[in-house]
Length: 99
Image (cartoon, rainbow, N blue to C red):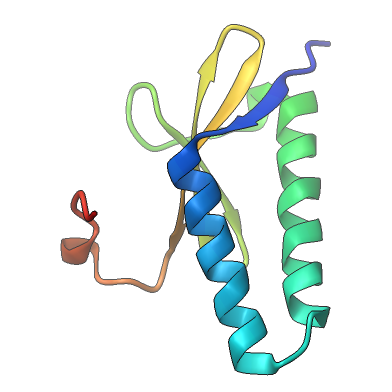
């Protein structure tokens, strides 16, 4: 069984920070933010240990859904690279390359 290393791109880290900051701002509490972060980590670890169960989005991009968020990732040798973290409730037409 292959276990992959999990790495995040800078853009994905920024998106995750923005999402977690949003939940802290809305709830004025760290509880949901912490739960969401733990779920993300658990799901990524599970896929890293079982890479054959990934869901394919395009030829080289896979996704993982955690609550209402999509983690877009790709497989490079021995690494699960998280490229983006998106809110699945967004309008798909607004998901172009934004600064």
